[in-house]
Image 1 (tube, helix red, strand yellow):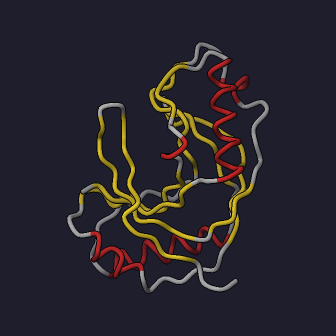
Image 2 (image 1 turned 120 degrees about the vertical axis):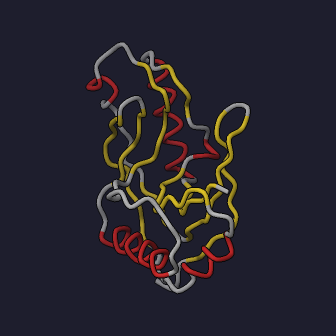
Length: 172
């Protein structure tokens, strides 16, 4: 089972990202556009791991207060287009605590430096300049009230993400 910890993107932020995707399509971007239901911010990628209950037990010791995310810029990793998330101490602290809990329970995870982003287009192809894509970027915010343990499966038309469980923020 391919597992990861994430914040699902919802509400006005999700709508703004869908509009951004439409804008990019109108500019000529081609590729695999991430559907609304798959938009998320990955906090820790675990990968192949057979027991989600052990993961939830490990992260149950982590408590976090609700905080907000704000869209901030966009960019690309090779042929992947993404929307950025503004740096926030509460987000960074939450990620550190989650990753520490995974490590303390010997649950392997990708230890790459956390670079908060929301993937919007995979295998993107754009004949124009990136500068053109970076105009008119949304700056919406979203309140984070839960973190989800997600499963990813390869489907006929791309990845299918399923929420297995979640943990809610404590009192703010």
